[in-house]
Length: 141
Image 1: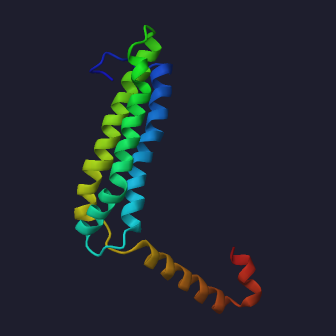
Image 2: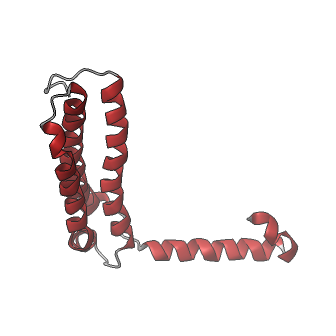
Image 3: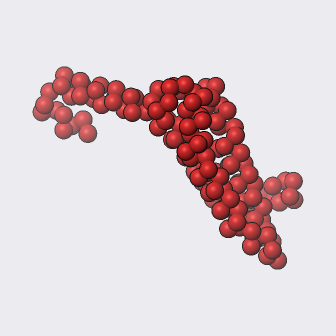
């Protein structure tokens, strides 16, 4: 924002809050798909993630950018501020979701499959329920 000469005020603050929510969306799609991948190694999981959800995240970023292009031609300073904030959002969100996050996951990401982790927790819950007794199972929920 500083590079474009914007200062923090109520308009830029609201735009930043909205853009943070959208940026989290870009990153979470990639993370969830990585965890759902059935591949074994981190590199394979990242490749599978980018092959299946990468194009959708990119299209989402491009459609957001296309949706805010009319704001660039507005004479209102408020609309210009929102345009600048959302352009930054699209660039940073797509860069984090499609470039930075896959690199981090390929080095540090878990190798377990999410369904294995879920099944382990279900087994643990069933064991706890069996040890507590049938009468107290309803109280666990």
